[in-house]
Each structure stands twice: as structure tokens, then as C-alpha cells.
Image (cartoon, rainbow, N blue to C red; front, side):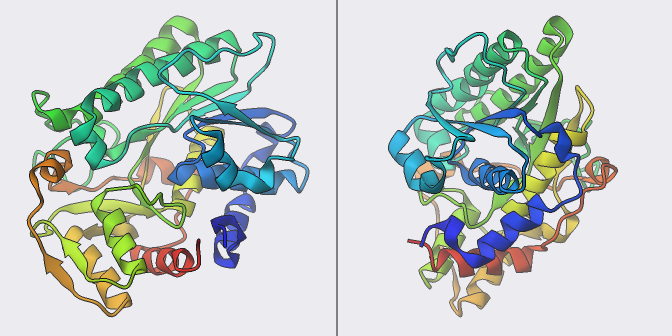
Length: 352
């Protein structure tokens, strides 16, 4: 079974598609999405394609490096006139007919796996900086109505001990002279580039800052700690914790991340960043592992990470996001961490 064929997953897609959002802004328009086969991008496309069944008529331009990978994920879309696959590497200039109007661009493509931070730090940085600049230039050329740059909770750095949660103005410590700094520093630079394009090119840009997202669209190659826990849970194996597990983070189920992303795209103010997170999904890493272990009737075991793994792990010990700004746009999450994790495991157990 494909993930989009799963009844529970279809419920999630339908929930987002039925939200009270200003969908008319997308009606008879076009939307370009980089990272289309990723955790968040893939569900976002499923939502738009479902809305198209109800007359949204929004043309999707899905950017990806592999047609095979794209077809495997979106086979049901390839004969649909509202879906267009574009083979593209964000590190290169995007060449398309200059007369083609692209109304909305969402830049979601990024290396978000700790193993990649350690083994391909150059690629991590260039994807986040060169990639966003290439799509910003494309947005200028094609007179995009709005551009959304998917940023990350990692831009906040280490909690200085002066706040419980990070609001959008917070700026914590990052040691830039480390390999691991490549991801958060390049995301910070991406945000700065967005502000430069607003000031110098007149682009309309919003910046959704996504927290640690999980869900049934999770890729098998994802090496984040939570992703590893989920993979173990689906396989009904003991959950391996490679630290004491005291890290206290914000997490969010993918359906709620997608609804937050759409809320920022359609209701956010130009130049503003918005945290996409929910307090009901704030949890320590140890408790996170325990939730999954208890659900699949297994144990949490402790194991020291190897050198490569350790180099890719975040050094932040407390990173909770304040979602008050997004809540003012009338957004709210549907699932807490317990419900979201159980739902993720239930769906993935049935996916090929």
C-alpha cells in the first residue's frame, strides 16, 4: 500500500483540505514546491491535489532530482493535468519559459538529516544558501505573488537559559567553527537572503520556521533521532537512545506542520517569520523514546553514538518554540505527541 492510499492518511489530508483558510488565493493559480518528495512537501501536494478535486484548479509544479522517486511517490498524479514534475537540482539555476507565471513558490528542499551534516557538510550548506538564492531569482524573473522559505527551529541555536520558549526574535548561541554549524548557520543566511530580496527586489516573502516534524511521509533515509525511533517502532524492535535523553524539544505531526505552512503562506505578513509548533508536542528525547517503546511493547536501550553520528547531532539541549504568533492567525494543532506518534506507527506498518 502507498501512503496516499492509507485510509488514516487520507483522513489527515482531508482534514487539512477542509480547513477554513483563504483557499481562493490559490484558485486557478500555480504553485511550485521544491523538496516535493520530502516529509512535508509530499503531504502538501496531496492536500492541494485533493482540493483540486473540489475545483481549486491549482497547478502544481513539483521539483525533484529523480523522476523515478517522484513517480513512485506521486504515481496517481502523473496523468493529472494539474500536476507537473520538473527534474531539478536546487544548486543549479532553474531554467523555464520566462513567460510562465508561477504564482506561489515554496522552498522546502534541504538536507535535514544529521548523517548528511557529518558526511556532506558542503552539500548541506550549498543546498541551503545557493538553493534558496536560485529560487529567489526565479521568483523575481517570473513575478511570483509570494515566496515561502521553510526555515528551521535550529536557527535559534542554544538556549541561553533566559527563556523557556523561543519566540521569533530570539537568537541563541551557535559555535560557527564546527562542522555541525553548517546547517543552522546556512538556514540563518537563507533568512537573511530573503530579507535582502524583499528590500532590493520587492519580493513578497514569508518565513515559516518548522520544528522537528514527523509522520507517515517520513523517508526511510531520515537519520534524525526521532526518525530512528519511529523506524524501530514500526519494526517492533527496542528503541535505541544514544544519549541520556534529557534534550527538551518541540515536535509536530506532519499534518499539523502542513496546516501551519499553508496558514503562513496564505495569511502571514510579508517579511515575517512564524514558528510552527505546539506545546502539546513538547517532550524530552527520553520520554519520546519511551512513548514509542511502550506503544510497541518494547524497551528503551542506551547505546553510545559513533564518531560520525555524534558529529551530526544537534548540541542544543533545550529548544522549545513559542507558537503565539502563528496562533494569532487562527492556527491550532490537531494532534498531541502521543496521538501523532501512534498514528504514524499505525500507518507506516501498512506501507510498502
